[in-house]
Image 1 (cartoon, rainbow, N blue to C red):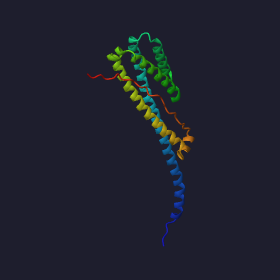
Image 2 (image 1 turned 90 degrees about the horizontal axis):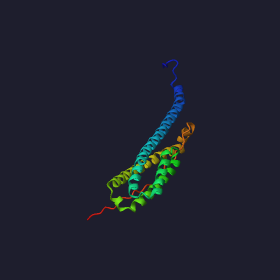
Image 3 (image 1 turned 120 degrees about the horizontal axis):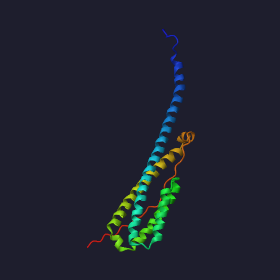
Image 4 (image 1 turned 90 degrees about the vertical axis):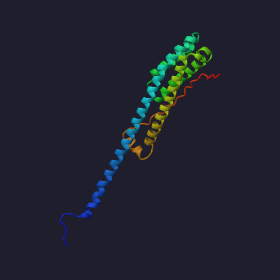
Length: 196
């Protein structure tokens, strides 16, 4: 029987296995690393969406204060509290937790502004006030949607960082858990619809 010289197929199988195992481990590591990077980028992108909506809110609040101020000029302290809380929220660039504290203070001060506005029936009928109120309602809905999207992405990233075996890659490349963004919902009170 003829045998080709120098080729031993029986010896190639163990060599193939020895080469295949590290290759599979490398492919697994790359896939996990890329998955973590994708999740981290989703968290950053969703945080940018929250930031955009918060900026929209920051732009609406001074207009709302001005309209209410026209009707309730003697409520100066309530206006000052809103302006100060807005300025702190605008300047807040720390972690989501520190930003949430400033946002919650802003929400509380705007709630006080709504209480002032409720005392003035003429204000409740003002078209500019109603338009600003509607825009703020829409903005709050968008903030809440962006917050839910961000928190879902943070949950996915944090889970991936913590579970085995992807936690090995996360630890090796220093992926860090992200903070959730928990803020109170700003309840924008709508003027009751009057039907005659």
